[in-house]
Length: 295
Image 1 (cartoon, helix red, strand yellow):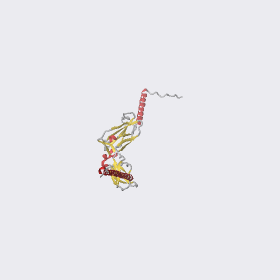
Image 2 (tube, rainbow, N blue to C red):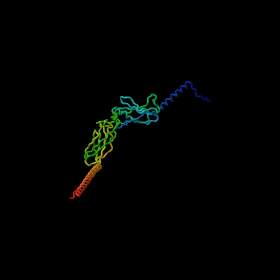
Image 3 (cartoon, rainbow, N blue to C red):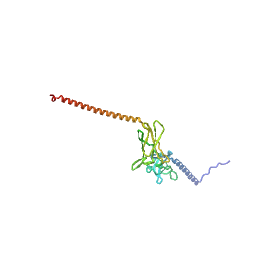
Image 4 (cartoon, rainbow, N blue to C red):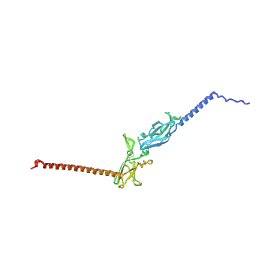
């Protein structure tokens, strides 16, 4: 009959070697798990309108935090949003310093609660954004119509210049201040009773166009930078319309008011005159009947 043999007992030096080997394997597994929890950002996107500029990215962090840095091509990296759990960072205060510069941002990923580095190399995971030049890339915001008036055969429209966060000597600049003649406005206008649109353009903020007398017109405006290859146009403003009925009513109201005022003045003058005449006649009658005049 065969005799069962026990497994051989390892020698002491072999047991020590196995212990170190298992410890190293566990350490690597733990390190890999920690690194896996820290993921790199992706879909870095600039969101900018009238120079208000925010960097957005994904994903929403679970076991890590983000730090955002920004730099010009020739500058140093600056921390702007430090160890955040948001997926956006407002970089307006940096880009408005020079809207003609080209900027680059990057998002760094750190393990949650760790102010140091991630990974065995001592460097955090990071991803660079696309380049961003505010003067060329910021979107033009929706313009607004400041005032308008239709007088006979002229329609006069004034566009309100949007203010930005770009400053010179503590004064906030408008889009016109920044873009100058590069910025034009397009006016779309049509008869209120028609759908056929006409256009007019100006590199100022004033329109004065010929229209048909007695017709109501509707219109809106759009900001445009023709020299741009990307994002050359804003969205169109809200639609405004003229109304002859309202204007005619106002004019009629003022005319009637003026007539009533003149009539009241004339009545007052007439009443005063009659009163003076009556007093004068009474005075003459008293003198004629006075005892001194009796023969």
